[in-house]
Each structure stands twice: as structure tokens, then as C-alpha cells.
Image (cartoon, rainbow, N blue to C red; front, side):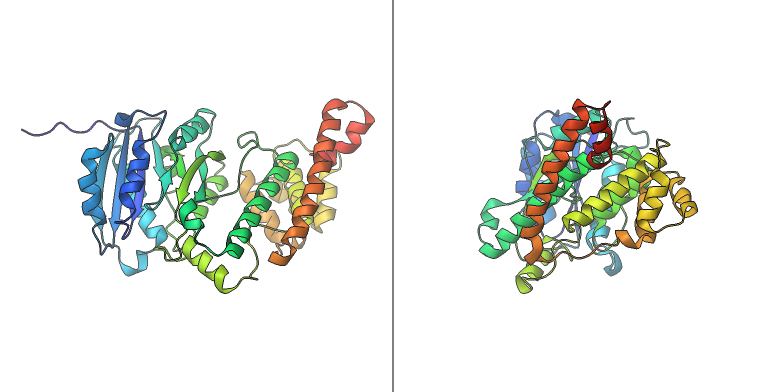
Length: 385
């Protein structure tokens, strides 16, 4: 007797996996422990690509222990596509196909890594962000404690210091250029370990960009350029491997090995000196006001002078359809906004400096809130926001 077809899921989690026989069952078990979601409303798709081990077989055997529907597919990607972007795109396309020809209006497509373990509240945190209006959710990650303990102490200190500084930069961003769709607390991570988006948003940007390295960052950049609402949710967290021998070129393992080989290499390119970040954020907020048709008196002229741009050029940028492409274009044409690498040796000084800036910003925000109608509030408003 033939089995009845599976009902269309509301949530599909797509997992690319290459030679992850030692990790895949832990990944699947973590998804079985998720809170706040009915197992019969979700499906998990493991795409075993270019494997030389038993990843697919072990996943299929493990399926009978899981409370949700598990689909296991296998493929051999050609050499030019056998990279992180090709593997994740193949997984997400196969995952999207599970919704069928007429997917639910609220269909959600997630992706994580085969060597990751989603924390029990991972799905629930993503669902809460969607309920609040997000089109896509960038989760975050934490290193596996047992594996992290095996890393050299200087590398652990460096990773912790960079993460701390990144958090401080995001807090400053929330004070200067707040986003109602992405409130504080938030982060700035775009990781394949935690991707969640509406199926409609996935199709709106043409799916996952098939780039060899940084496909996760490229996806969220495409979503922002399309004017979609991206939430950077700290509570949507996945525990990831921090082994030194990884599967993906340009992944975490490569980064850790490079940092071991070059201890004085510049820090993550997303990080910059505190004062440069302050300028960038104030310019971004001024452009946001112009783009939204809510300029303050003097905004166009002051921003054009500060960046050395003709007023007409600035006006053309502010008139672009979506804000994020406008901001990217402004950064491209304004030499003052060119990023400068931040050296590891300078990081303690920059951390101290940003703590000072944050104290001033919080003080200014409090005064503006208390005396918004008075001269003190007016004087401080530009600095605090």
C-alpha cells in the first residue's frame, strides 16, 4: 500500500553537508529539541554534496528517531560549483521545493550548518522576529566550548576581544542610527550557521548568491539592497565547530588557521576605529533622513561638505529607490568613508575610546529625551542621534 504524501510544511530547514558523518546526527538531534514549534509543521532537508563518507546513510538511519520529517538528498556538484555557495544554494533550492507548487503564504526557509547545533530556542527566536515584521533573520553563533578550549590562549583572547568590540560598535549604531525593524540588542553577524527568511523574500532576491566564499553575507546584502527588513537577532543562536580542519574554503577553520599563522594580522574587516565608525554612523543617519524625506535644516549641505561631494551628487544618491543601495553608493564615492584596516595592537585603545563615546551618547540621549523641547535638547540632538 502506498504511503500518503507528506503535507506541505510551513518551515523547511536546509542543511548542506560534505563529509560530516561525525557531526550530522548531533545537528539533527539539536533540531529535534527545538521549543515553540510543532514538529509536524517543519521539514529538514540534508543535501549531502560531494561526500566521500557515510553522511547521507547515517542521516537516513537516524531519521526514524526524529520527530520531524527528514529528507536526505545527494548530489555531486561540478568542480566550479563545489564550494560553500554552490552547496548551500543546492540545499536551499531543494528545501524550497519541499513547499510544493503552491507554498503557504507564510512559508519560511531556514539554513544552518551540518556541524552546528541549534540552541533549543533557535527556531522560536526566529519565529518571534518574523512575528514582529522581519522578512529575514540573521542569527548568530557561539563556538563549541570543548573545541574552543583546545585553541591557543592568544587566539581565544583575540576572538573574544574582537567580538566584544563588534558588540560595542553595534550599540553605538543603535544609538546614532536606530532601525525600527532591527532594534537593540542586535549584532552584525551574517553567518550560514543561522539563516532564516520568508520564502517570498528568498525568491524576491533570486535565491542564495552562488559565490565561492561569503554566500551568507552576499545573501543578506541582497536582501538589504532590495529594501527587505532584516533582523539581526542575538537569541537565534547556533553552537558551531571551531576546529582547525574545516570543509569550506574561506570558512571559520581557514580564518582561525590564518590567525594562528599571522598573529598580528588586521582584525575582522567589519571593524574600524571608533571615531571612523562614529563618522560613518552619523553620515548614514543623515542619509537615512534625506532618503526618507525627513531632512533637518542644513542636512544636505552639511553632509555634502563633510564628505566633499557636490550637492547634486548627494541628492541623486538620496533619491535612489531603496536606502541600502544608496548607502553603499555614498560609501563608494566618498573618500572620507573609505575603510581603514584596524590593527590588533590598536584594539584595546579603540575599546577604551568607544566606551567613552558610548557614555557621551547615552548621556546625550537621556538629555534629549528629558528636554527635547528646550535648547539643551536641541543642541545635543544631532550628536545623540
